[in-house]
Image (cartoon, rainbow, N blue to C red):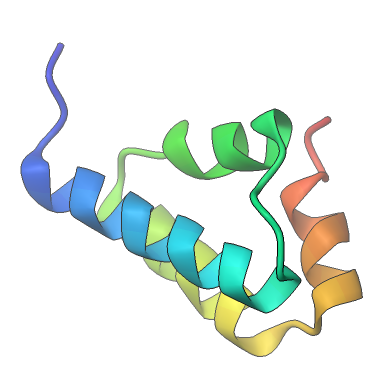
Length: 66
């Protein structure tokens, strides 16, 4: 099943913001945490967390399903 282009764009924006905050590329499991969500509501919550958490908290959050 193909994903909606809006969802893909939102996922990429979140990934870019997380990488900028962490000052490194995301690890595979961190990227999977984001791209496994296809719901705009879930992505909005992840995006809000990326914006509000400090880098250490963000690493824990993105690795919470590891």
